[in-house]
Length: 109
Image (cartoon, rainbow, N blue to C red):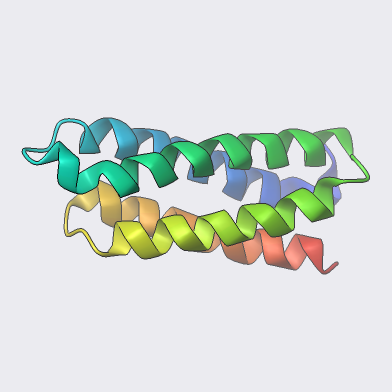
């Protein structure tokens, strides 16, 4: 693993997992329709986090650009998840905030 990116890769992978868990849990909620935006952002965020982690692991020249985009979607996902009181949404919002901060740090390095 590329040591320079290790904490950011870890944050991206943790965030992707939290988003996947959140989306799955949201699908079990009483009012799934109310959770539609949360689920959609969870899926998008998880996918981009995994792409960012893979690009950093490969030492891709485009990793910083992808991490900037990743930070932006993490912000969107965190903002949406934070609106919901369920524990899975709150956990996801925290993981997204951490990932956004790590991605910004990495992109500006």
